[in-house]
Length: 122
Picture 1 (cartoon, rainbow, N blue to C red):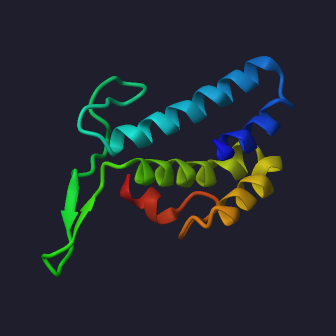
Picture 2 (picture 1 turned 90 degrees about the vertical axis):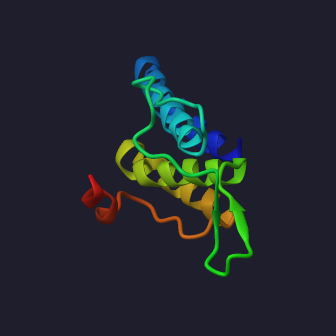
């Protein structure tokens, strides 16, 4: 919720149609993060299977530790990563606020901006 509040402060500075558009895009990103970490949720745009899916769980190499991947924690981490990826392009004025949010809540490995490594996958 705190992360969405950071967005809201800056969305209020736009004309209504632009604010609605950004809100819709943020909502779709959030939804798709939940869909990637779910068995049954569909893509927010296509209403079909998401482009990527994670298994319900994974077992570490030691064979003893199982990590549940379909969890709210991982869904939120995905959402925060998507916010960080687009903030500089969409609402540059909010970059510092989102960066502060990421730092305050100590999200690991979050970098602002698009990753060329991810681009290479598509």
